[in-house]
Image (cartoon, rainbow, N blue to C red; front, side, top):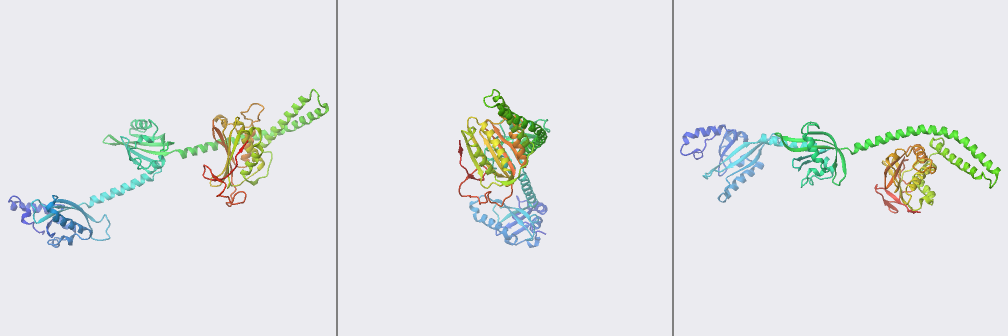
Length: 542
């Protein structure tokens, strides 16, 4: 049986004998622990709950010093009590609390240890004892730990999402801005906490349109908005296409926040663009193959009669002699027949009716030799030629003569597009981890319209005046590039210029430059926008 309470502890207005049995029974039955301790910190009384919490029988608690009960880290509790009585004359605080942990074994887990909330009470009458209330909060602490674990889990789950997840209250203040959103929009989490409004990630008016759609029944139900394509704004001002799904968070039908998931569509759009380009290239290849077969037949049919026309026209011209009235007419016939022969030769090139040997070569040499022929031509006057040729450019397999023809066709077209002068920039570089060698030819001419871009590789298509071109230059170039298992396309065109890209499979090298020498990384190099080292080439200015 527990020790009875001291008389002064239970007396109230002289009714001790009437009230004590009831008070004692209440203390014995209460689920919280109660201890009465003398001011020298020896236990006077404990109820059953306190005995159970401290895992010590009644008989072993009475008269013991608190230091024998609260051991280890819990001894700071006694220091706290002693400090109270030391400072009591100047202290008004007679109640305070502290959490302690009770564990029987060192190998017990955190969830298995008992956590007590100790409430210290010193009565206002200043007796020679004080009261300790022991409240078992183990379950609450277990719930707190579980809540923390779940919060950490959900926080990690949200942060591990590759999509941007953003939540804001109804005033637009950011509540959640996960790592996906930080990566997508360029803002740090700290930046979104200080005066940042959710409308800053949208173009003007879009945020309010999104809220209006969330409140509507037409876009997935009230409070929901599913799979909407819209544009958000990066910190640097860049517009980013995203797929948005989100909704309004309610509390008792009261709107308290909005949330949204933002999926970056740039990679998907790039894939769709590449698929569309591949589809167009396949259609172009099929069309060119059919035209090639037709062109081969036409060329063979025309070639022999044209040779006869030229032969007999020259014979007649010789027989008639100089100053004959028909001399100019015959010379016109011969000149036009020669022009037809050139067209026939181009048709044969286009239809792959000729074969050439493929050798290991350097695109830089192809560019240099072509420029050597063209730079003194009248059409290249007032044109500045800028070379950015990669010193470590991977070699390719190809035919230098045919590739010279391709490069020449493009450069001549570029010069004609810059009628009043401009800049022709030629760049070579490695791409796709040195699996491709790329040649870029960029002019500052008037550009190519989107409709023209669809047809520039079609045979006989030309924007030049009648008699100035056959319309076979780029068609033949396309066929030659495909012959080299490469690609040719316009990657950029605007009123300020056009850029052609030619890519060819690279021959894997041992790391040396095409000349067989180690590339010089300390001298004669310049850094291009792609971050690769290029040999510094002279500027040709005609």
